[in-house]
Length: 260
Image (tube, rainbow, N blue to C red; front, side, top):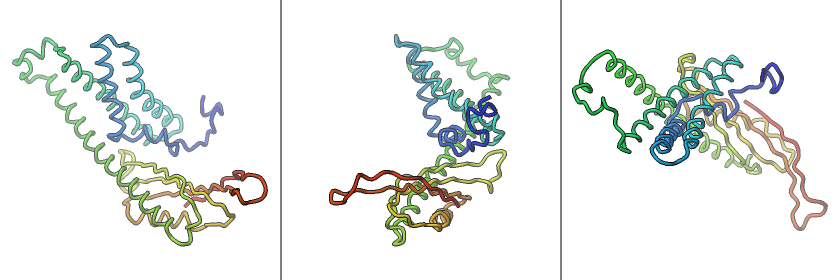
């Protein structure tokens, strides 16, 4: 209904929306929310704090990923939906683990946990828990690797873009913002299909054209990263009125976009 009811444009590229992209890639930074949500829930249950605190914390960890799954399904983006599904499942698991550890720290114990013999006994449940723990360990290792790659990409983009704007032909441009979106490896996308999207916002006070800026940024960034990089350059044109100038104050003008 949201898409085909034209509440939003049906052709909207949701994978380029920063908020959606952030909750479609399982990285360690997004797991922190789930860990603190589980701990907050345990704190609310073990003390006199309002249980609404637990609800808000858990919702902050679960709702964005669940919404990203729905958007991926409606917009027929299986890679986005799959990544958000993995993130959602990991968040649910981490919420329970962190809540269990917090309640244990508060002195809560289950009856079975006090019986060493039952804890050491190997049965179907123990095997299942072991398999689940192995899967979680693999996902966590993959998430750590994805986080390292993302941070490396952000650092490389910022460094290389700064080098480009230090060149003489681009000295008149003012760097306003750099947004880096990362698409990590997934089951549906091979290692060679990993990609990144970089949006660079620059300000200019003249009508001079810079048709080669986006390709130059793309080539400079791609030289140091092992992935395909799409670079979008957004020009923000503005006027400046100094105390000694004549006429009224400057007024911001239109925004132009070039992409490579």
